[in-house]
Image (tube, rainbow, N blue to C red; front, top):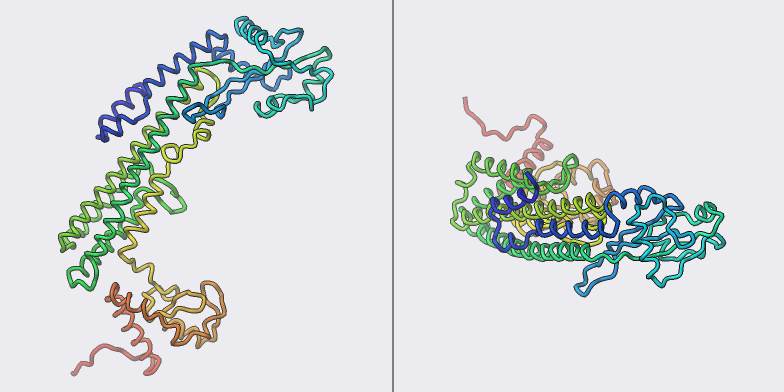
Length: 456
């Protein structure tokens, strides 16, 4: 099936909003315009075979050099206007490249005769006599010294710009569409970003531990939900072996895994408050919308890639790699939507439900209670620091600063301690009991047990 048909069907079956579909890449229109481009080049004797042959002989000092500039002069719409520039080697006013077809030779002869530019003699001139525009704009396809030595008779170079029309129309359409899609994607990301921030605020408000037992229960459930969500890495992975943004196909699989895990663990039943249950539905809808944005970005980006490859195939002008760089698309062709949204989810949503991993002591890997903030600002539980100081260890295990022996009561972080008691009450109780058990063993010996006495 041709891509144009696949493209239309994908836009229809994915259920994209009408505004999105109307803004999609006009692939069919671009194909029709490309046909005009190829016809125009053919009429000028510059068909794809001729241009491809000239491109392969660019290193030949006696060959006709050409360069297709995408970053030419800007038009009234601030879009670039491509230019096709030839550097023709003449001898007695005739193009010397034997590879030129008769029609191409006639065309170039007419253009040279009409232009008022002065040709440059290369037989008796130094390399400094080369026009700067030739040396820069062709990426040095010709070596001046090679040209000087290749011919004993006078050889001149004429720089001309081929007056094409329909390639400008083609890239005007493509640039306009890419710009519009960038604006559309930015609008959708902004809407989604506001929804993320609002949802984070609502979840934080509903799960304040001070609001009672049901709120504390929902807080623990949300913690488990977000822990699963982070493990799923639905849209973006930070792991070394699969680092980077997911494709829409991969994202669908990971999203399904996340939902299956939530259902199998019956976490939804753990949400007792109506606000929490509504928030979970909104959270799933947000992920579905992000997935839809990702799909729309992928299919349009693929359409741009396909039409540029078709342009190169039919014209041999080689623009498929240059266009994404020249057009400077910050959204559609940059492919950063998943990374940007995931970063905002982490900052504005997931972070409102504190995760235990963020509050562990780096030494014992248990909640850092009682928390002591050293002069280097690293935080450890007081028990671990006491044991380190008894061993005469002076340096922070994380940054190696000489701070442990200077730690005292003034380094106790009371605000963090209150926060841990509020958001991790069960873990704090377990840590207090463990500290007491360890201290009693130091006092009463290793056989000490805190189990209740039993009478025989």
